[in-house]
Image 1 (cartoon, rainbow, N blue to C red):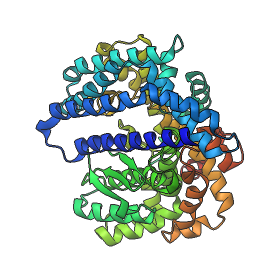
Image 2 (tube, helix red, strand yellow):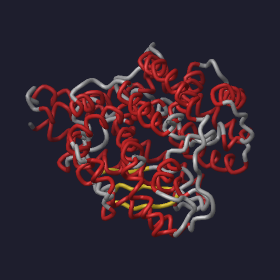
Image 3 (cartoon, rainbow, N blue to C red):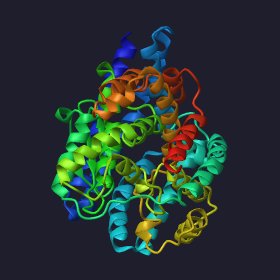
Image 4 (cartoon, helix red, strand yellow):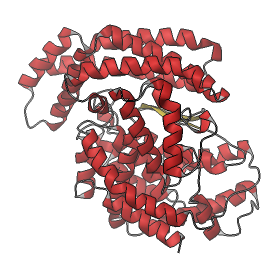
Length: 491
């Protein structure tokens, strides 16, 4: 298969360069000097120019056509590689190179502007650069959509095959039950951690949690960032967390969440490394791993019993009398502004707010100048609390500054997928709770690695979940899990 082998050699080089570009982003979030933002924007733009040039090279198209003619239909791996390359090539050919480079430069600069504006609670300082990001993303969406829906075109970068109509139906099914459950939960009293928790001790326990959940620190590292994230694939997968001395759960569960992402990347079949199959197939499937690690496993009653003991060892008596009280504190349902700190009941309602607003921005029905007011009005209507600071509202997430329009709904897709996977995992590992009580995640994470993670991009997103669970993904397993868990917690 001469053409296929030549094509894959080119793709491996491109994938390696993309990993280097991703490392620039990791460095910008963790270690880069603050004064280097403008230069980093130039560096990111230069890398994007090289990558885009390779993606649209006519020789790539010629090799793709030749490879498609010589690869046997029965070769599932080669066919999957070609599927990803073809999708990427066709999308890249629609986006002018100058636009791709301009977006890379702008979003690198906008990320720094967002961080400054967030620290100052000053949306007006960020709005001009965000307006430019939205303008360029609309231009990119128009090029990709080829006359179709702009938002659907952007969704394909994060969840291939998904469309806004399906998301609307999913959210319409979920919202009433989530709102009803929230109403009951908010009427109850929930214990809350009080006091201060040493930052260094939090990071030590975070390192332990990362390893308990299977993160290989020989092929990764744990650092601090404003917004926790995971970066890389294969043998270099890095995660970040953040520390608040008054809220150690923020640190611990951010770490577990990002470990879910990282273990997905580390768990992919090594023969796919540095190829189109050597990374998570979609952000929804990716999020399913982070959410099942964080919530169904990490916030379970069984695991909370083990974590309570670890907290006592690390911090002594911290005001929670027993493991049952600790479990309630971990799963406390409370009014709050921040998506990443939201409880399981309300998290998807935060996502729905962002989804509706970003759709309106891309459709041209909402201006960047009106975005902050629209956010505040919607938040007050959905959550019953006025937003007083931009860092608690429109500036809390990094996503729009770096152009990730279409990304937010994959968080809820990940929750939906995680609900399906959790039900299947419970059937496959009947002693799961006994293992979690001992802080033993080995069998649970091995099941996820075997049934989801190892496949990388071999199958389409929905097929990954269907193969693991024996049924097409749907919202009911997640909703049933939440009803049962919080029904018990609220009596």
